[in-house]
Length: 627
Ligand SMILES: Cc1cc2nc3c(=O)[nH]c(=O)nc-3n(C[C@H](O)[C@H](O)[C@H](O)COP(=O)(O)OP(=O)(O)OC[C@H]3O[C@@H](n4cnc5c(N)ncnc54)[C@H](O)[C@@H]3O)c2cc1C
Image (tube, rainbow, N blue to C red; front, side):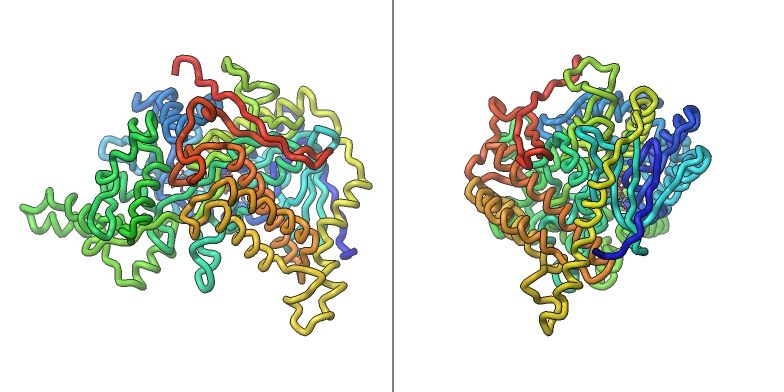
């Protein structure tokens, strides 16, 4: 076996991940841990300052309710999420996040984040719920607060450790194991409680950007389904595994469109000039009541554009020039003021990309795009798993203790596994938390997990023989490579192992062609999904034969195994839900209509660690009383 040193770390609370959720969890948990003499340990596969989806920065905070100013109520936010998710959301979780999110945003400001304000000192809104920020250093600011809180409470942060598996003691999670991505070290984290906060997943589906563009995607390439894998392997019940997110973005560099739609009030049109949201309005009747209420759900907006593409009316365009000129028109009488306004709008357009998707600015520059002169192409991206944004996949977690709902079996945000908590992208059915809501949910989970440790946290009982078995399995790709790499002239081609890149291509091809990816125009059916399940059998067999040349490839191997589990849960749940509820995210051609009578429910699943079998189940959607 590869000769890795084993490092043991003992802690009270383990936080897996270092993104917005983990930073929220760390900040809050450290406060309560210090009061109770407990230790908090955070472990991230990357470096906290720039890890996760906010690594590059953001130009807007997408969840701010504005209760202080009387702008909205928490109930308004619950109604908004219910509408956008076509009726399927855990309203107790959404409510809990919404009632805490404003205070999180005020903390961000206190920590140094520049939130735009107007002449009256009020926050500048991009849309109803979104605040404009100078967000290039957003992640650094939030990470700094988490680091300070952990240091102040005597906790520890481990960076560049890839968490591979949960450590289990029956139905109780007692920590995690993983390996350093820089040194030959295998880590065993023993914990009384664990929070899964390792983000969502990308590259489960074949991306549009292949070949020279490979690696470019809307969702950052470093989140690879670890939250889903970790919670599933622990035996946790999962929810909304069928709900993927497909954003429509500027084509090929995936630049954000929010500022264009919300701030600049731009229109999106087909190549023939028709505005699909207007031309195809009647289609929305088929998706009542959600299609007829405002705002129109993101998937339905996608769907109308996709119908244009299906009819050969592409490319689709964002009317940037029209929008900019319309705003500047108000200054037409004064040429100097007009010129100044045009300059200001032009620079806002570029800054929007430079804040969070620099490559889109590169692409515009490379293609001589002047947004004030000519429209720019947009397209639906490939599917992603991101429970904190407009997707919803994640673990099924216990609701807040003070609300009267049937969704309570433990501490807030605890999974159906004892001692295991999930938040942000890792918890399901509570979409639209975004950066601020994920941080708020992390805080909720952090506080609840410390409460669990104080009240119930027995010392972790870890079977070291099992850990040794895990170590052997986790490092086996290195051994397999070593044993067989000299048997062929080209070490990339070998009958005894498969390298992670080729393995990933197989997974992506399977998902793309059978599970409703880009090349199948986001359509699938029972027959296609059944075939996908047949192919998964072979893929899973071959995952035992992954080979790795070095530490980097070892990480790639495990990233792909995590992706594979996310993919399988997705296919199984799309098969289970016999209707089409989110056209624009996926369309089941054999059950093309929404079926409120039979499928206004959560589709949940669970992998049983004892038997290795999957169980699928329906769970009721219970609206929050009075909302
Ligand atoms: C392209 C894009 C644009 C967005 N735009 C906005 C916006 O404008 N405004 C807004 O408010 N929100 C926006 N969001 C949403 C926001 O980024 C997410 O809601 C938020 O980052 C979710 O937090 P998280 O901690 O769950 O995941 P992340 O912040 O992504 O963090 C995941 C963490 O897990 C770590 N990790 C992953 N795997 C492992 C492993 N195996 N072991 C250890 N660590 C691991 C990662 O390194 C990272 O630290 C956007 C998201 C995306 C993808």
